[in-house]
Length: 148
Image (cartoon, rainbow, N blue to C red; front, side):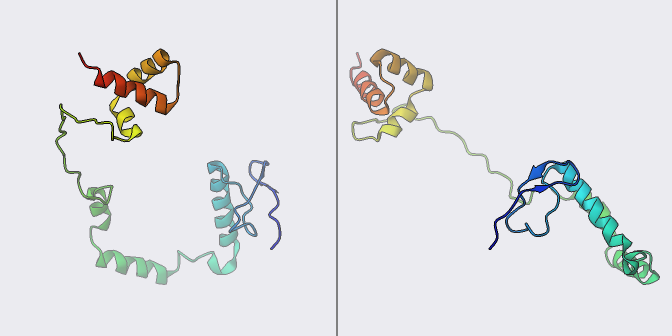
């Protein structure tokens, strides 16, 4: 397998690294204007071939499209009425705020820190002089246990 080398984009002129899966054929970089230029170039090259010049103008193709439209009446009108996302509507859930949460010494350090607002954690860090999670959690436990 050969190494992938940088190429110069014909549209913007900048060097880019082609995608590894398509490096043999990729000539344009991934920027949106360059992708648009790539598409236009591809269509121009396709239409230059003699067998493709009247591809969509042939009476056979016109008849094919007319048959499809007759078999699917109102297709374009229905498309506007369809929902955008293909997902179920979200079910609202009522939030329950537990006032008496039991935080014992057996709780994980992360659980204790998640309960504390970030301002409180910052204050504890300032008071203890340490920014280590273990030290902050220990100080928070001590403060919580020494309730008046």
